[in-house]
Image (tube, rainbow, N blue to C red; front, side, top):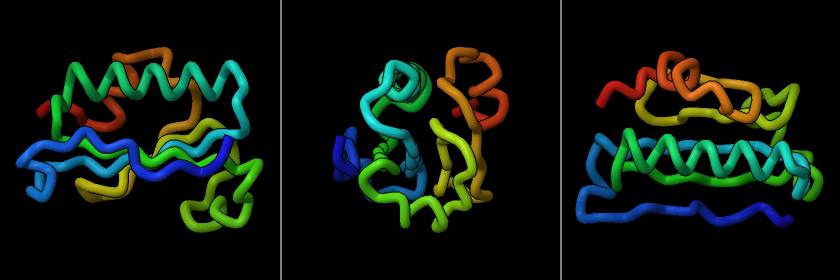
Length: 106
């Protein structure tokens, strides 16, 4: 699985400051990677509507990108915007924990 372009959920609000920029680091096409991506998409659809962009980085193909966000385990989700930058490691199976950590109370 190659590093993908941002999987944007675009709307006219996409350029607004409310748009969440999320980066998901995965390792290949493993079940855990697939689960993390599916869970992230579900959370974004229910909590953020159209105000988010997801970029998926496959570290098996681009290991050099792990240094950018100091990734030590996968899957790892990094919230770039809104600041401050936040990270969560795991498949995001515990939606309540993910919502709490990322303060998705929009």
